[in-house]
Image (cartoon, rainbow, N blue to C red; front, side, top):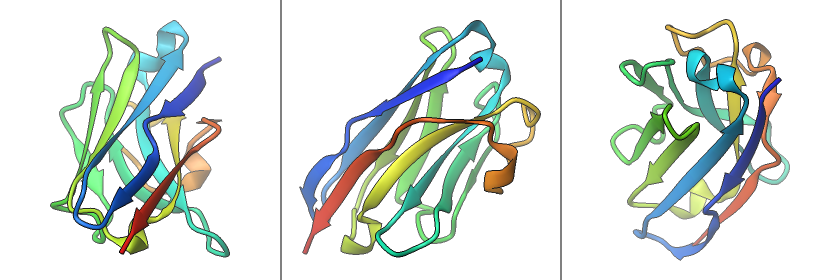
Length: 126
């Protein structure tokens, strides 16, 4: 079992930056792929970024590529999402998730992620 807890959300002006953190419990986290998803009011939860178990392979949604960076520190059981050049359309609840089967190949579909955090709110004002 893996439990995930996000932090680092908040209110920021357009063009600003935030760094989200995802703290994981459980010794197996380091072998799982992990990802960030987000959900805006009235919209489906959507993929943002994913990273393989070692941190050597990453994948991004087109809307955030070049602005967001996903990373992880397995020694600390932590995952991160650095968000730069934020836009009002980035406003959403951000969730981290872990995929037990996708260790070496980060996947984009929600269906693959068995473990989810409770989410952290990110609000970008114009």
